[in-house]
Image 1 (tube, rainbow, N blue to C red):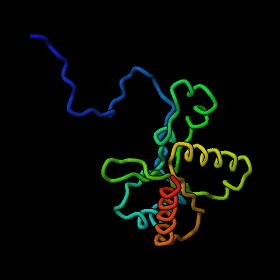
Image 2 (cartoon, rainbow, N blue to C red; image 1 turned 60 degrees about the vertical axis):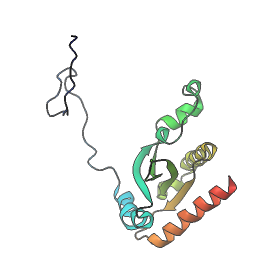
Image 3 (spheres, rainbow, N blue to C red; image 1 turned 90 degrees about the vertical axis):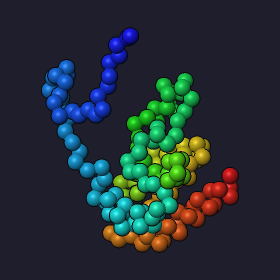
Length: 159
């Protein structure tokens, strides 16, 4: 009879391991900025309802990828350190449906526009629709739903 180490049923980090000394990290407290949270609560969540799962702050590399040898090239480096505001996925198996970005005034900056264009082109190349919405004080969920539905319908008919 061989002995095997059993894994605990659950684990916690209530006590540090002691292997790494004092680390300089602190909690960011919230996943979303106030503007992103307002868009999520007032616009996106009511617009999507139960049709899709809404995942906030998703790493871009969880949405799109490149061949293994391209990770060290520009195409890999340009997606490695980025995230998208929201990813929509099917409820059944969490297949990616679309990416939703919320654009505040910083997206008017020419350097930021270049990055936004690259994101759009990268998602397009990977076959993932992108929908961008401007930041507002109030959102109309019905309008957001119609826009997302139109983008997805047009995307499917173009493919």
